[in-house]
Image 1: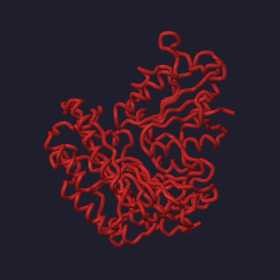
Image 2: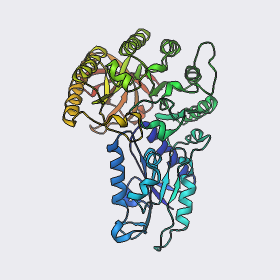
Image 3: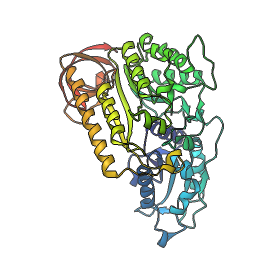
Image 4: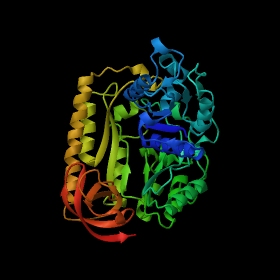
Length: 462
């Protein structure tokens, strides 16, 4: 049996793509292994959001492949002499295309973001011609667009998943100045709602209790394909359909765009109890000048009004965000506006990125004028503000009872298990395997910046 190791870089959508590829490979008779040294095939599912992510993947592939000087034109060989296939798939493959072969001429497979479902048949072909140690076949390159490819990311790995990712769309029609995603993922393409509902029903029947809906801009789901009804967008209609599924307890989604929030989606937080009281809301900057330069079609005032509206809908709402520091033209005054946004919103969690130039984006022409030392200092300042507010939020929960979906055994601590409340806070407590998948009440006894600990009080739902 052919053994495959998949290494994933980047976002939750990449994780979901890798899982779907693994499931498709299993259905073709391949086995998925956890250790690359055991593998006959190594696939790297790559990210292009930041240059550092691309460099990590290129470096990894280079170490796996033969030396260009010594073995150019040959296939990779494992330590025990077995022939090994090495492939790159995903965003970096789509972004760099055939140019990757200049750096990695011995690569066996290059697959773009709309061709994940073609990986099994490509591996079948490669393995059929690579049983010996003779000359390697030509690299298979599959980067073209394919209609309906958004519907191919549906299969899941076998076994119970208490919390599961569900891809509902692919691509992005926005043109943020710093972002490479429209190039790597293509135009927005939505899956039919009935297919998504069927997938979630199957997951729930297998034991899933929480789903996270995925899309590049998830709240723009279906805007070009499906009608608005009774003032409700296709995304809100989908949330309503999923909320009706018996056995599904929680619904999350990521990542939305502030400009895509309308009253119907805000109101969904009032009406749909299964919709978790947590939202990832990328701000990117607190300065209107920088937001305009980034081509983000909202203002600081609009962002704060949206936060206020969501808190009015659910007073216990939790917020996380994305922010870029050091975007070209960002002055100290612009950064202070971002810092003050953190103080005002009191984000519970945030991903803070130092700006890096991405070739092919509108911002490429602006260069990278802000020194790395200044970016690093701004990054640390925001993280300090985040830590302060995150700790305060967690400390405020000490003494309360929190509803927790029990997801897994904790990595540390004897008989310790972990789960999250609706606000996505990690909570650890003593339990046993029989509680997995159940919703329990936990009395919170201690808090750190990143986690809460407590004692299980009772079972809320089986």
